[in-house]
Image (cartoon, rainbow, N blue to C red; front, side, top):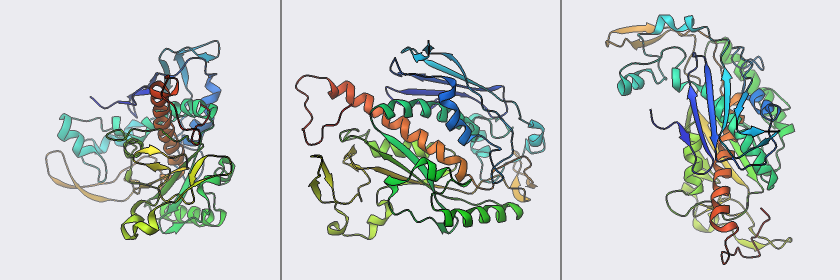
Length: 376
């Protein structure tokens, strides 16, 4: 099975299935000398783990990471970092009645079409449980980025038709995001979002929404001008996450109704001597390369496909039938998704920062203009 590795210089490979023994994550290309311990991974893994609040799935997994290699005497040693997670609360019997039925909204049919058989227990390889590997790798990427002044914060922007008011995305803090279980920095909107999620749960249904992820402190110059544009790699990263159906950055689809005179961001020289723009409709990326302004991305997530309602479907033999999905599922994916989105943005940015540093950061004659030079 191809497609299990992400990144060019900072490479992340995952293996495992939702109802197997566990998951393995291998991170190759991490620079040596980065302080790293299990405790560094736990905060973000705790934000992703199931059972953390009343509005998410109640599967009870500790998601405790075991670092098997790549760290010596408390620091990364430059060799591949291997992290193991053991599954504990699987309840595979919840899926035995649907082994020959295709769940609407899931990858069951497409898996069969590709491989000729599938692991029906919780979705197998396509399960969102795989994201715990990405979150662990993202926590390491965040540590590296933090040393060069890059900060990444994600939050819930919208659930259903409830939209949060976020005057300045670049000023949202982690403390504001973590102040409520839905992870929305607008307290009034958060309360209405929680009520909506509880309502759809009682109705045995689910609801979708939008997550916004913001990176600040990103230096100008990261990204490539053609195939590996920063925006293209970010789109790849976000769209590789389960349940994501749409991606945009900056003004996004709003540019379709704007004129050039309205959409362009005028350049200025800021008080600190750095070149910047008066507005940020370009979302921190121009020509596929970071501009130095905050990078602002949004992704749309579909409603959870597994709902406890009887639905029409067919068997593997094409016979009409109905299906009732059992198990423990999120009525809304957004609260737990936030840290997954942060992780994928961190993986893209650390990879491009390493590529930029290797190409231009220390090469004689490859000089960055003083007005956009930032310490790295």
